[in-house]
Amino acid sequence: MKIVVIGGSGLIGSRVVTQLRQRGHEVIAASPSTGVNTVTGEGLKEAFTGTDVVIDVANSPSFEAEAAMRFFEAAGRNIFAAEKVAGVKLHVALSVVGTERLLDFGYFGAKLAQERAIENSGVPYTIVRATQFFEFVGGIAQEATQGNTVRVSPAKFQPMAADDVAAAVADAALSPAKGMIEVGGPELISMDQLIRKYLAAKNDRKDVITDPDARYFGIRLDDRSLTPDAGARLGSITFHEWLRRDQTTAAA
Image (cartoon, rainbow, N blue to C red; front, side):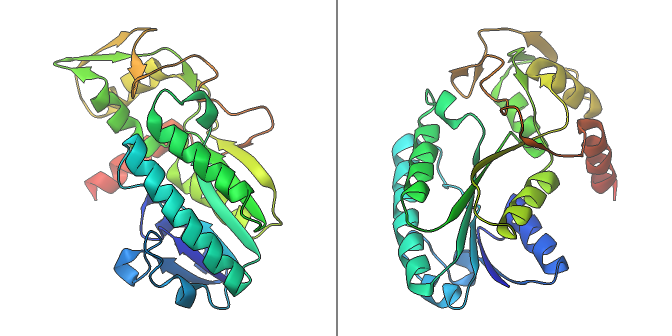
């Protein structure tokens, strides 16, 4: 099977490419660096020729609402048009659990518009909504830091390892179209607890303050904001195991 991975050199995309190649498939990692630009349409026709499945895990280079909307709209138009010409059988895209609950941050409005465009594209699709990645926990802590204090919501969330995200996306590419599915981590934990564990593992002595009014990229969270629905596929890599691997890699 020939599979094109848009955003194939990124955190998730590179893992998807590796996993699918290990399963014996012909996989093209498509990105501007390989001559494929979804915003301009450059290289899509050539990349999609003879392709069975297109996986889109590319993200907007900007989280600003209007810029993200322009990116997803332009990329979607060009991708869907090229897929129809090439006769692509399945479109798989990565999105975010709770997108419709996070609209106070304009980027998520653009992600929701991307999902709607996929649903209306006329191409069979599976949208894989994933929870936050362990790999971004450091960024959450940094965003919440003021001086030597990290002010974090106690809201529950269910983050997961990038390897588990990639496995879910790869499996979706090898399965019939499923519409919308959700994936999450194996453990439900409050955000403040996880940030404490992360900073302790990094020997970072900042004070973590539990604050229900603390914002997550401008959004006030509750226990449903970032958690998947019942029946979601759950990854197998725990935060403890991910930390161990991360520390081993850093020490190598």
